[in-house]
Image (cartoon, rainbow, N blue to C red):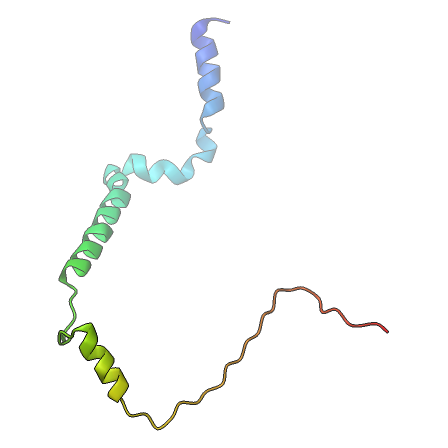
Length: 100
């Protein structure tokens, strides 16, 4: 075999045949479609950056020193706190039963 025929065989092994290349034809018939994915990516990144740059809180909290905060916590009136804490750990380990 010559060098050219060896390269063509190697090339045909590394590429798909025409019968299996139907889903890629849109990119050869419409070259503008090749730019669709990068353009969509750029638009998503730019949109996310725009939203992040324009986001802000509506109300500003008053500035407080740590001492003022501690005083306010000590003077806070609560009628009482109550609640129930439920803990469940299901690790998928079977339960061991005691055998006597």
